[in-house]
Length: 208
Image 1 (cartoon, helix red, strand yellow):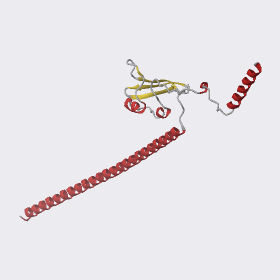
Image 2: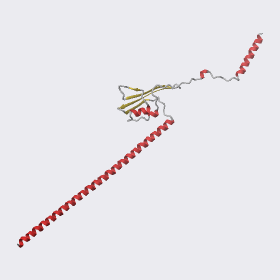
Image 3: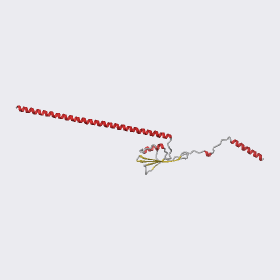
Image 4: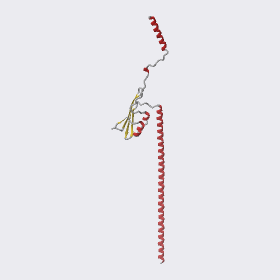
């Protein structure tokens, strides 16, 4: 009886082993990682937008570019703080702080010391930035060229005006000289007429 039970047990064990060769392995639950969404707390910025900030921008231009600041001190509203503390789904933690200072409504200082953890520019963003910089340089060069042309035109107009002024002055002097000459001639004729009249009167008196 014991032998029969042993044989039956061994038979079942062998069948189980041979069956497992055809059954695919099922991954254990420990290998499946649940999806975790990114959690952003604060102002979300990118280096591409930060790099577009320029000294002299107005508060309105800054807001249009990077949005409303996280913190504005009501007692020191000349400073805007953009703060972010984000936990990415990958487990990466991103913390950064951008500090902007204004005088009146004009941006005067950009402090980027606290944005080292901000992701670097992607290749696409680098190309966009290079294109923007090239366009800005071209615009500056064009404005410089137009300014130089305007200054050159103004100088030419100044030279023309000076030449006309000198010509008018010379003409005026010529007119005055001519007028003096005519007056001198007229005076000379009057003197001649007077002398002739006196001579005539003298001759008449002598004949008497």
